[in-house]
Length: 430
Image 1: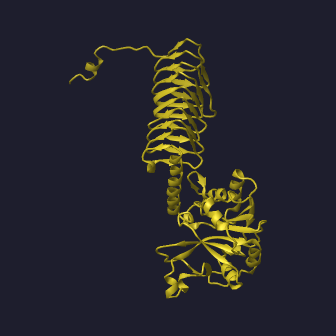
Image 2 (image 1 turned 90 degrees about the vertical axis):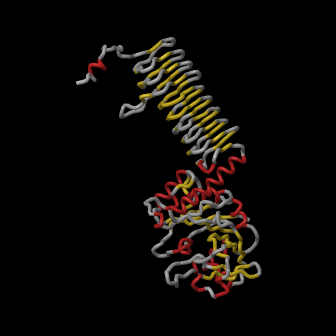
């Protein structure tokens, strides 16, 4: 059966206490709405996102990352509520799956379960040990009879532990019939999507409950919810990568972006942060190092190293307190306390402690090119743009301001001088 998906993302999200739209808050490197879109794309090629609050900003973000997404603007002044969000939405397939944009933990398997079978409506439900505060879903002989808000429950209904998880798969023809019939004759003066369940039951249609895991259907409404969802998604990401052979020391202390990838034999020590679409191949990332949108291959980084975006390290050792930014290092050693920015360095070269590339003049960034088998002594400044060819030695404390020739020793130092007995004169006892 062909499936269309509608993602409701029109809410204001006031509990987030933020000027950023709720659905654009990031979880493991990706906006929560994008997690929902990714899951939807696993089951459908007809996806509509319903927007209202900061609609233009959200639509622009989506269009930057996805093609072929349809958009619908809710008239929330005229038609408030979840049912109001669906008024005017058109889908092309036999069945329409209605998701929430603030449910970033949903998976393909759950969506397929919700869209399977031949019931007129599949409705997601959760069994809670303590359902206090939730409307109860009353089920009889395998079908939903009604949804009863807690304040309206009788004693028997209050004992029910089954509650609505908020996602529905509906026969599209029925949806097109029921949505225009929704009314707002309630205390909140809103149009409720849940009213379609009563309409279907009253007409003798089949409404089938699909039991789902609470974790997957967790909504994110606050910064606390955001943090909880991050923990859940991080656990999933790290579990999956460990199954694929990545070693992790104290994995609960490690952060891995959902866009990062690993190949071969990789080791992540405690406190490591792998951000963006980083690619790690046969490498060892040591304690408290940070990798950001970088390519690390057959290399080791850290402890406490930082590799910033657009950097590539191959067959390279980066030690503690070394920062690499937008640079390519091929077969290089930089043991400690160095900054390498906008540079290319080739095999056999050694970068001493305290070395920096001076790549910025206040207006523009400039390149440093270092060839093979170059020894850069400690506390050297390489003032870009500058090229150091193969087989060069640079003495400690040198400031390099112009290109040099292969085979050179480069040094720039003030002559050392000593003043005899100065210490004793300066600290002479009165």
